[in-house]
Image 1 (cartoon, rainbow, N blue to C red):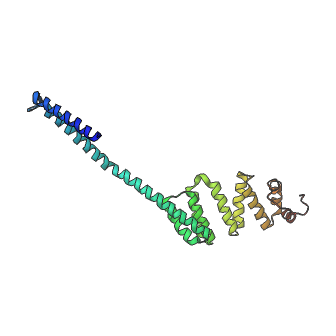
Image 2 (tube, one colour):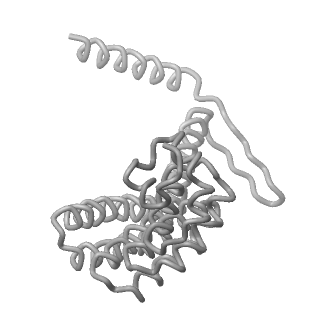
Length: 232
């Protein structure tokens, strides 16, 4: 019903315009230098309207053409995001089941799409699990390069890897530095305790005992190992 009513209105408008054109077509004269164009006002109006729509569509076409690079960039970003999610999920899944070689392969693809430092830390973890020390250290250096605002966290992770590889001296140097920055950090205190117990460095360990006891990070057995005379 609405459609028929709309068509009826258009027909009425068309009839009205036709009547006006027939009754008084009017004239439009355009003169420029030696050129003179004369036509009826209605033809001129229709010409202007047609020219407007032609200009509008030409502008739209050029706008769409110039927006193609931006559109392609958005599509690439979307595809990269999908790949990133796919590779990250597969890499994490492989690490969970212990397939660290496959995890490393997928995590390398992740870093090619996103060079966030945490991705390199995951790679370092995968390499550490394979006892690939050189690759682990390479990934850690890349983590430092792309995570300059997170050196504390990266250094902490690096020191923990050193401990797992029995690189006690290297780990101790880092943990001492981190302890100066955050003396109450339980991870750092526990790591220093383990290293000092491992290397039998009792004197620096005794200095940590008050803080270790406050945070309940040391057992009575460990206290006896340090010094039977140390109060518990």
